[in-house]
Image (cartoon, rainbow, N blue to C red; front, side, top):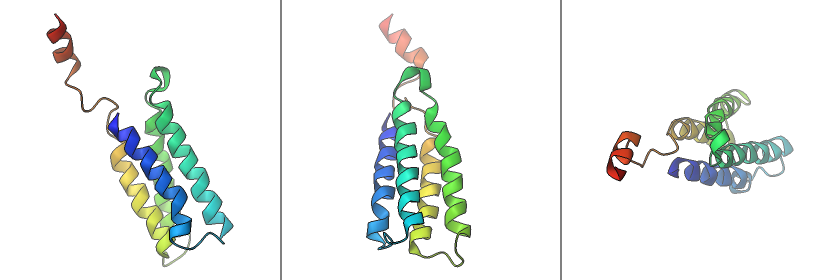
Length: 114
């Protein structure tokens, strides 16, 4: 489940980034980043619960929206929106990783137990 941990760490970065890029006075970026970070962390956390184990795939939709917002909100994109693009593309890669990617295949695990 290391992919989910990386998604939560990325959500923390997204929540902190308005202060790093000194745009905390822009309420749309500040609250947008907080809301998106909360949504990413929630979807990642829900993936730990078996009935919602595929909730992290919702991050794909969120990250596409983040990339589009970063690219088309202001032209040319300032550093805060460039951060949205990079975070969105990064999350697109990480959200595709299965929850148990670091474990051997299920058939190998059942054969080993006999």
